[in-house]
Amino acid sequence: MVDSELVARAMQARLNAHAPYSEFLVGAAVLTEDGSIFCGANVENASYSLTNCAERVALQSAIAAGIRGFVRIAVVADTAEPVSPCGACRQVMVELAPDAEVLLANLGGKLRKTRVSKLLPDSFTSAQLTTRRMPTVSMAPSANGEARLPLEGTRVLDLTRILAGPFATQKLADMGAEVIKIERPGSGDDTRAWGPPFASGHSTYFLSINRGKRSVELDLKHPTGKEALRRLIRKADVLIENFRPGVLEKLGFGWKQLQKLNPRLVYCSISGFGHNSKRRAEPSFDVLIQAESGLMSLNGDADGPPWKVGVSIADEMAGQLAVEGILLAMHARHRTGRGDHVDIALLDGIFALLSYQGQLALSSDRDPWRMGNRHPSIVPYETFPTSDRDLVVGVGNEAIWQRFCQALGQEALQTDPRFASNRQRVENRELLGELLAEVFKTRGCDTWVAILQKARVPVAAIRDVRQAFAAAERDSRGQLVEVDHPEIGKLRMVGNPIQLASLRGHRPRYAPPPLLGEHTREVLRELGFPETTLDELGAARPSP
Image (cartoon, rainbow, N blue to C red; front, side, top):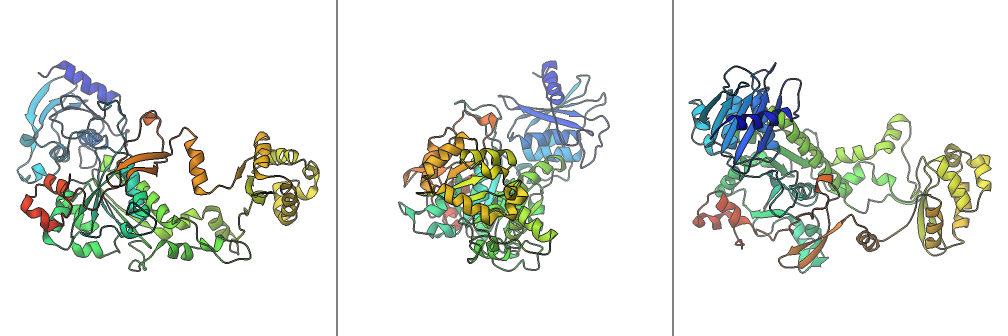
C-alpha cells in the first residue's frame, strides 16, 4: 500500500542527499529490504535535458551506490506540477529495473502509479528491456555484520595480463568490485608460467596480483567467444585492457565500437606510450620504460652504472593510475550518464613520478645526477655503515639537526658554520658525510637506532623483505592477510593498503587468485549459454 509515509521517506532521502552539480539539482536513492528504491529529486531551476534531468541523477546515485535489482521505484519531485520522467530518466529506469513498479509523487503528496514499461516510448525495443539486469546489492550491513565494500555492485571486465592491469584490477576487487578475468584458453595470463619461484606449482608472480577475481577462458577470435564477451560488456561497468593499441579494434572491441553497445562503459587502456602517441604501436616492458624515462639514470652509485628499481615500478605506477582514472570516470558518469576512455601510458606515469627530479631538469640547464642513497636537496638524508650493518637517517629540518648532533655527542657540529643550515650541509655534504661515517662506526646498528629514536630523530635499520613482513605482523594494522587457495591451502599475501574508517574492525573478505578457467562455465551459464555451447568457448575447467 502506497501512502504518505512512503513519500515522506523519499523526500527525506532527497533532503539528506548531496550530488554533483548541486547548484542545479540534488538526487538521492536508498533501498529498503523489500526491494523498494526511493528517489528524491529537487527540480527547482533544473533543466529537463539529457544532461541535467533530476530524476535521472537520483537514479544514477543508486547505480553509484551499487543498488540494483529493485522492484519498486518511488520518485518524489520538489514541484507542484505532475511528475513525468523525461526520456533520459526512463532509459536509466530501463537499464536498472525494466519490470519495476513506478510511483510518481509531487511535493503535495499526490501519487501516480504505473510501470517502467508503460513509460517507454515506442522506439524502445524488447531487447533494450533486458540489457542490464543486475543482482540486488544492498548498502546495509550484511547478515554476518560485515560492512559493505565501496565498489560492491560494480562489474569489471579484466582483459589484461602481466602486471599493470592485474595490479589495478586486484585493487578494484579488494574494494568489492566483481572482476571477471578473461584469459587465453589453455595457457591464460603469461605470468601463470613465470617462475621459479612457484608455490605448489603456482607462480608467485601471478598469485601476488590476481586475488579476488573470476577466471574465464575465452577465445576472442572465435565467433562464440566474441558473443560471450559482448554479453559480458552489456552488463559491465568497467572494461580494462592492455593489448597493443589497435588490436581490440580489429576484434570489434575498441572504445568507439563499444560505446554503442554500452554507453555507460568506462573503458581503460594501458600501454607503453599511450593510444594517441606516435609510438603507440611499439611494444614495451617495464625495464624499457625505466630506461627511456630517465628513471634508471637516477639509480645507482654516483660513480657506477644506472640501475633499475627493484620492483616493476613503471607497471605498478600505471596500474595505480588506471585505478585513479577509472574512479574519476565513474564519478563523472554519475552526472553525465555516460562512460569514458581512460588512456594510461607507462611512460607518462614515470614522468609524473620524477616529481622534484623532473622539475630540476625542466628548471635548470642540467640533468639530475646519480647519488646512491643520498638526497639531492637534504643532508644528512642517507645510509651510514655502523659497526655491524647499515642504517638510514633522515634529518629533514633544523630542529631535527640539533637533536641529531646532541644524540651523537657531536655538539660542535651544531655551531660549525660549514653545517649551520641545510644549504651549507648540502654544499659540504662530502666533508660532513666523512665525519658522520666515523661516528657511526663506533657502535652497532641497534644501539644507534635506540639512541636516535629516543632523541626523536628519524632513523631505521635496513631490513630485508622477510624481516619487514615479520615486523608488520607485530603491528596491528593487518597488512598481511591469509586466503584459502584450493590447491596451495593457506596462502599469505600483502593486503590492500587503503584503510577506511567505515570498514575498520571488519575483516577483509579476500578471495584467492583463481585457477585457470575456474569460473568459465559458471559465468557462461549466467550469460544464458546452453551446456552444449560451453566447450566451444574454452570451458576447459568445470566450476565446482
